[in-house]
Amino acid sequence: MPIRNATARWQGNLTEGSGTIKTGKGGIQGNYSFKSRFEEGEGTNPEELIAAAHSGCFSMAFAKALSDAGFTPTSVETVAKVHLDKTDAGMTVTRIDLETQGDVPGVDEGTFQKIAEDAKANCPISRLLSPGAEITLSAKLA
Image: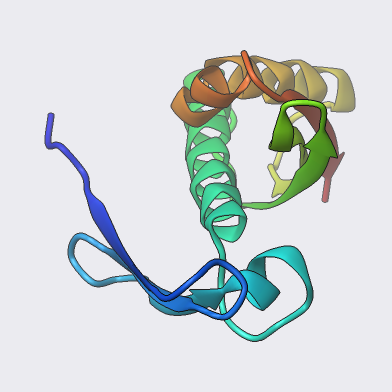
């Protein structure tokens, strides 16, 4: 399997400095700053990139699990909300809320929910993040 990479460059001190983040092949790149990370400033931040990775991974894992169970999804759309909180250990990602909606012909609600929970447990990014952060899931059948 390929090894994926990204780069970040930070210039200056924490509160007045600024930086850039770029994925290895340049598909995602953006500026970030203290304000974009800890306030509501312009630009991106590491937590948004975690949210993008998690929502993308979960959507693919859920689509695969649905297909493997015999239900080909028309679409799966997921929002990941990453909570960055101040703890005794310092700033910490404490929780990620996955909110997904699937348009899946022929599946019943119970089966849909079970497959969603299994996908959450087996998504590679969920497996990476779950030891350190609570991951919640709200799954809606369109």
